[in-house]
Structure formats: structure tokens, C-alpha cells
Image (cartoon, rainbow, N blue to C red; front, side):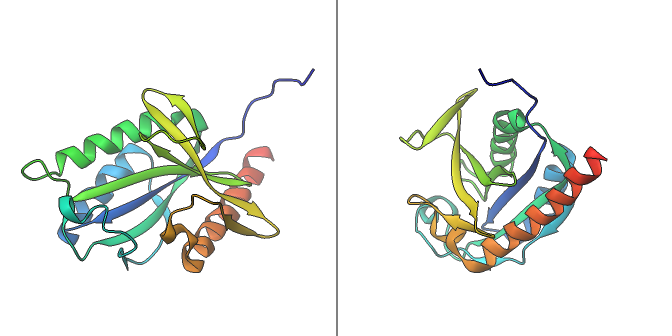
Length: 177
């Protein structure tokens, strides 16, 4: 019989897709109030991998990923997803989102994203939220899986997540000392 032990704290991240860059300051403040200050973020990059959001949010979307300084329990992911959905709704205009927020967390071995959409490779976490293992860390890098979104396959995104992982592992070392 395996022994039950506490799961290590995780490093939360969020992907932000935005139609109106003037909303960034508000989004940034809301996210940092929700979790903690950012410790790393990507530059904005064009989000032109899909037209999934175009009808609702318009064209010329920009995206960035951020990581949060404070480590938290993995089981906070459903609550965080619900809170980011509320932020999206607050910033909506005439029933259409201007911001899409995709929270998740990183561990030493994987990136898990929160979603409300059920598929065979997603695990129900509670509160209507599922977890999607989106990348795995293998042989020194994050590797895409069969269902990994195109933007998460990009070398610069995977390098960003590798950098976040390094910060995370250093933080875990600090906790364990």
C-alpha cells in the first residue's frame, strides 16, 4: 500500500489573450490581487494560431504568459479558474469578452491548464472545472502532447515555462530548507 503524503505546492501561471491592450493594467492588477505579484512574464506576441476567439474578441489578438511568485496548493486551480472567469465577465463589453484568461499550474514534471470543456484526456477537479495536462517535462525540456495547443508548442513558450520551472524548483528548495 502506498503511503499518502502531502502534494508539493505548485507554481501558478496564467495565459492572457487580449483584444484591447489598454485593459492590461486592470487585468494585471486583478490577477496580482487574486494570487500574488508576477515573478516572470513573456512579451506580448500575436495570437494568430486559431480563429476560435475572433468572432467574440475580434482580430489582432495579443497574448502573454505570466507566473506568480507565491506557491500555492494545486487544489486551488478550480477556484482560480472561476475567479478568472469573473474577471473576464467584468471586462466584457456588450456580452463579448475582451480578455481571455487561462490559468494553470506548473510542477517539476508537468503543466496543467484549467478548462470547462470535457475531453477524454482531462480530469474533473470539481466546481465544473477540469485539469488538462498540457505539457510534460522530459529529458530537460517541456514536450507537447497530442492535444497541446499550437502556441504552447512554440519554443519560446516552452523556454519561458522551463525558466518558470527553474524558479519553482529554487522556491521548493527554499521551502524544504
